[in-house]
View (cartoon, rainbow, N blue to C red):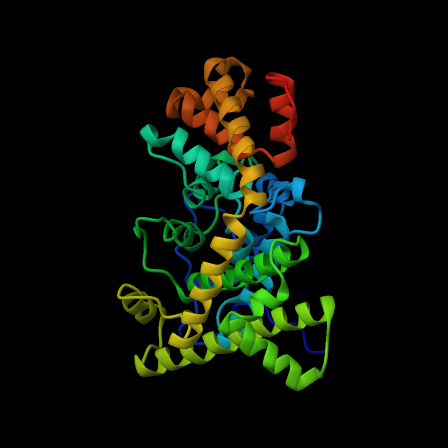
Length: 375
């Protein structure tokens, strides 16, 4: 039997010229010996999966908190959906799937509890200390907050993973992203638009009939009808949402291939140079317009709905109260956070601690420390 290829040979045979090879990695901040079996990016992926920050995603919500029921996605299920879409894009474009998987699994580990409401609250509370952003927080977790190894702080991930996370900062700073990074960002956008629409219908915030009035959804519904005939109920909804994902994936693959061909891009260096002028992984104008309409609908009818806001506002108040409680009593912080307060300040260390909480832990801690109802 022919022995299996090692990761170097496999990458040499399967990756496109514009893909990032693990053998060309810039390495890690703290040097480590090579692993006999796993590539650097495979090791990065495993470190993310085994991290406490990743496990906590199972009990962190995005838009809909636990008070809306149990159907809706958590940060973890969202992450897995992003990873699935991103790997499909990566394979179609000949990219490094190990790196893409790592970036997708890691992309949300900096999110605080209570979804967007939690992030907005921490950003306001830390306004004088540089604010709060989940992408920057993910980098803090990767570089030193996650304590897993005796030899170094953080996870000591490959520089390409750290650079990818740095490129997601809102101010646009950071290295020009690799195609692997851009693919994950695109997959994230596809996933959250689609599953927020699904969750909203399931929770009764909008109807499928209202969604189908949006051109992107309407076109998907017409294709579903042509393929499957008359469907109804959840079967129809799921078929339409699957079609929306498939259309966007196919569109991104076609558009990206065209951009690479037109730009004669045949190396990672070429990708970096071109990415400095704009994204290479981007939808066509028609699909982008359809996405904007869907996102506008979700913002007005879902994210700003009375049902979501009714839960969001008291939840933000509880988070802010707990933040203030710990700022007044930093000695109550766990030892590691107390130690870091001398370096980063009490308020930033309290933020790090609260950002790492799950929704349920925050509610329980608020009840224990301050008292009162949790919903």
